[in-house]
Length: 247
Image (tube, rainbow, N blue to C red; front, side):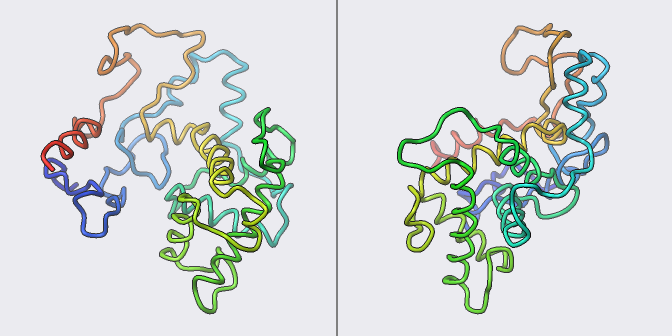
């Protein structure tokens, strides 16, 4: 593990302006996390599953099941969906949280968020247009590339950055408010990722508190008996704030 007291893992202090690959974090020793790395290597939220009520336990453990085939997106769209989810979530190695399957199931079952931007199509149509637009932009960006999924990581990250900045245009993007499309796509992507116990292990989240409840009411820094300390005592928020002051 590098010396993080120097702050050289922070994007602002790195030559390329990008964050250090999370492989600098320890290997997960207990339970599972995406790519088996994380800040809480000895923490496994599933060790407290016996404190959850039966309905909660059933719902959470079902998220660990082997995902089935996609039902909403077709075979031509699936590679781009997976490439997009892996790129925006930096899931570049196994084990991966099956976010593509979560997004697909939500759209296939019509379990949408209950609201829609006035200037946007239905979320299902938005997703189809986004995937089409990603393929179109990848073809325009890199010579010889047939799809977003076929592009190299640098190209995919460049396209995603332009998507996040609302800078994409032409083709399918003309049918969307691009900034809102980014919001729609990321809302569903992040919701799927952080609904999974492996993501909870990665961030040290204690999981469902019903009917167990909480004992510690001391605010930030006060851990429950079932919570584990991080592998480093660094407070990333204070570190970033200090860099702004020093800079």
